[in-house]
Length: 426
Image (tube, rainbow, N blue to C red; front, top):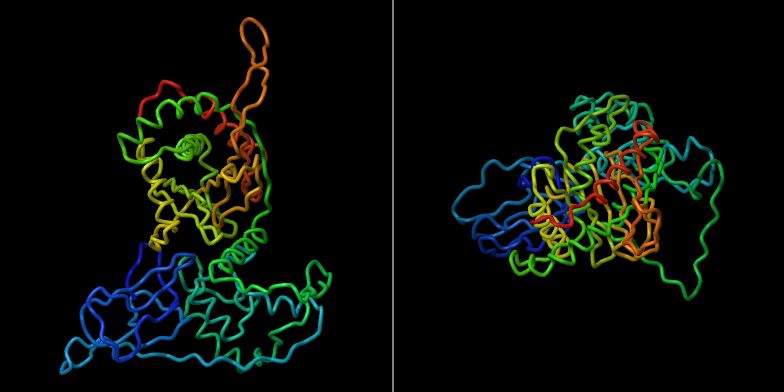
């Protein structure tokens, strides 16, 4: 499994493109893999024969572990092949019709971040799912990894003692879901209804969104901004910019620039929470939500965005958006974000209440820009003018961001947009 970025430690085998015994050419795709919501292809390092697959579709493989044996010389021996450990799936327990909270907790799926803020890697979550290890059990484990994280060795060491203690006897399925003590009614499916299984990316999005709402108490603050100067400036330079640079300039890089300036004014908005600790990020890495043709959503990241000028931000925005829509992102493109922006105005929405992209603590939604009659204060008195107005909405984690800072931050973003220089050059 090749290294796919600084923060990517493992990947899931999605599909084997070649079968055992197939001849492959150098750089020809052997297997498709996934890390979070990014799918990638692993090419053959050289021409040869695929002798053996060392893992199955659906397996989560750490970076650096062999996934296949490729023979480039029929007479050559194969060396340095890591042993393959097969994890036997436990038989499913019968359905249990119960509404007890304890049963629900034992069957709750393991998310990347628990309600207490602990992080669980895809490999640990996969082992927990296979072995039926509950969230409660994982929470009780003392991790040996960085910042107390539970590692593969921790959970594998726990399994023998767990089986001895009879933990496997806990029911692993319930017939009805319980939410806030109330039993949910079965959803009727009519004869004309279509049941659609979520694809892999949609399942990841659903899991991430539910986890975020469980993790962070969300609060949203709103402000309206007069962006007339910005609109007139873009109308004035967009044609010449496209001729000069060969690409279009949108409002997004200007929004990101204002977000960065406001982060420098309020650096405690650029943080993450680890239990009772606050991690203040020195780097400003801006995630930008991109809607995909499939209807799914992905958030590529502009790293060290504060070190880029407006031209650099424009090129980064266009590059990431185009590669996202054409499924050309690499796994590291979606890692390491410290603050996210989502443009709900691109769908004609005036505002939104976005869900925080964990483990960040804030996300800004930009609404549609609309012409409106507005009262303008002048030295000669108040007057009404037609202005380009938009709403900004900031959702933030109330554990560490109070209303005062959240409100001041989004107001600062609006102030930077309103004071945009109409004579600016780029």
